[in-house]
Length: 188
Image 1 (cartoon, rainbow, N blue to C red):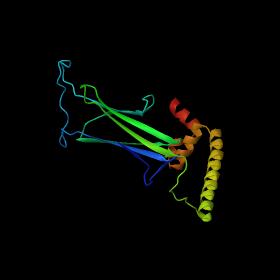
Image 2: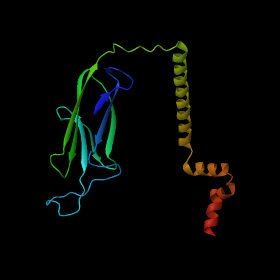
Image 3: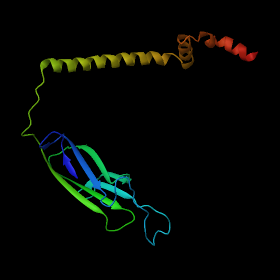
Image 4: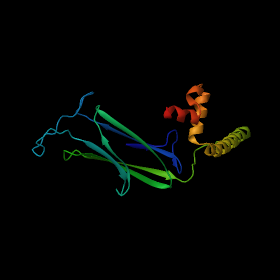
């Protein structure tokens, strides 16, 4: 199991921490599956199951619990989490089998998180780029406001009228008819 921030040497608060875990099944060839459990406690056909538990070092908080299906001779899992505090952060991955004792594996990883980056370059944006981002935000706000105005108008139109208008727009005006014509046809 490894923990890192993609493209960076150090881990800083508010970075996205990527944890990768790889499990290799040493006694399985590619394309093979595990056999059935051999035990007097299972007098029926049962396959073993593996469970992956990712927790903190004190094992009080769970980050992930997953049942692993063996479809190849290895299993890879990647999860990402935003780092919110400086200091050491420890992850513990526990691989457990529900049928056999003594096969469980535990892997610990500890990373050091710093409050501020020492070796990173600060990205300086051009004024034109900042202006373009602000304009895009203003345009989005204007579109959102226009959407709100049209939604208040839509509340005034009832569903039947809206359906008639859509059918007329689709060229099915003859199918719409008036409500009086529809009632008279039903009566006949």
